[in-house]
Image (cartoon, rainbow, N blue to C red; front, top):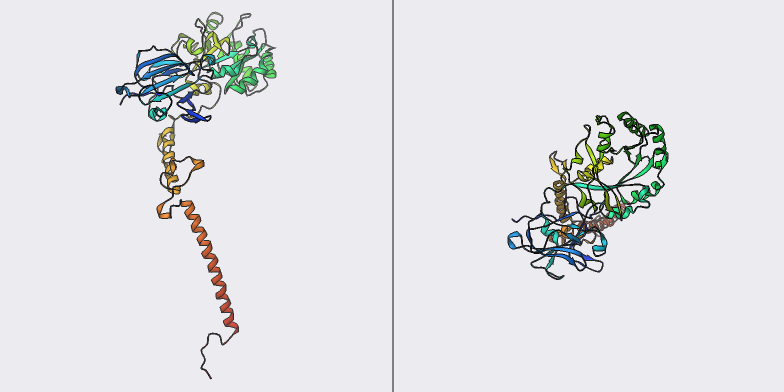
Length: 464
């Protein structure tokens, strides 16, 4: 069987299915990503030849791949993308062919997402030869080697009224903003706190440590201005105006946690740790490291990211690097800004921000028989049994109807009624029989009473 792949990595969302939409018909499936899909890689669903790659009416730009029979046949369309292949090029199933266009102005005026179409044979106009892609993707694999890496930003008053909503739409999955610097309060923090809470699931604040400010005084100032003790805090330790030491850094971390605040990884650039702190052992720190190692150039974070094996990820002082700041000139939210990466996807993101990770379909759970199964298999079993129950109650193949509008097919042996309707009808008959029995009982009672009061009732006497 020819290889077949989903067009986006594991974890994608279907934001608009194939079928009726806004009074018309949507001839494709829209794919997105939690927190935004701008710049995400797009992969060929099957092998084939690129027959379109460039501007397209309504799509901004697109890639169209014709699949010969040996590759599975049909034609796939990938809309609202930035092509990374050329017309006439042969591509293999699972090969990256584009990225999702991050700029709505170049994307047909819509938020970043992937529009996927599946055509029965060659590229066809909207109609019966444009098919729902999801049945064809059933059982498809996910592209191998896709880095489960997410990106986020850290912001301060230097960005003024930063557009957090736009940053989230462009694919940023976490954000932090400066709360204070020593005892100085960042005037943009209250607004940033409100905006991050509205547009990000994972967000926090940071304190830029001033070495001439006592750790306890600094922690008190942070707590007084924070506004919410549930906000996780990043220590930014890179002040050049004093003498940094590991003892001082530990004291600042302890002062913050003593106030029942939660720490994010500590921002400690490798150059600062090496050149100004003389490379001390960091294994005693309560959290991991947030390192900085910049690449050159500007662009969106997905384009600039140097990869999961970049030297910036190497441990420091026996402590792992949990977050890597890899550029200060990434284009996000209409500005050039610091951008950061977290390897390990959403689960690692949740752990670092002290949130319980979401259960995944590949997670192992114990079923009712005490056997380990994946969540996907458990859900499939539940769906199968639920469908069987629906059919038993409502009639053969009732499972295929939408729940709210289900019209039971009924069972022939129940006069084409569902089990529920049949029981209800039987209940009505039982009520009628019960009522009739009550009437008979009343008549019997009347006769019995008459027998008691009339000694001649029911006796046969000779005529005189």
